[in-house]
Length: 253
Ligand code: PGA
Image (cartoon, rainbow, N blue to C red; front, side):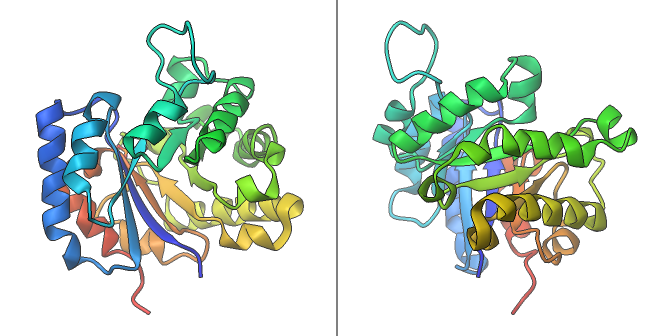
């Protein structure tokens, strides 16, 4: 049985005290959702210490939204995976489309960041996804395949076993336009097939999350699909009630 995951990507939103309050509100009502759902929150770097403190002793995990490609040294403005791990982060989002698009992250950079994450015991949430132009040209399978092959194929089996994948079509992020459940299932199944080609049956254990305008109203339809194991949530992760309600979207078994 694959892990069910709802991860919140807060992006560059909330001030530190607001972030702590959001974490406290999520914690307060977390028991309204099945304990079988794994919740992860990914606040900005500046909030991590306070949020980790606010969630201590709960089962809600904390992740960062990025980490440095180098281990330490003269890299002004960067935050290392070791620093994140020392604070108590367990996850790190890597390769988000906003990082690829606005900060020029390439597969070469991401290979280094993945190595840093693993060397420090962090589990990556590795994001893939095509933009609108690529989708309209029918190139989405090819784009996602390249993003997987250039980075995920370099992992050892032990590293792969600790990896979470997030499929986020760029045209659905923050646009209110969600991929249909059928579109999500089609590409999630494809991603699992290419993972299986390299890692065999281990790919059946990999959580593949959907991201892009996922909210309480569309989560049940998306999460009902065989290869959709949860969501990476942006906007709707900023309200505790919505974030938790998304966790109620998994099919009852
Ligand atoms: P969204 O963002 O839910 O606001 O579309 C998702 C993401 O970019 O992780």
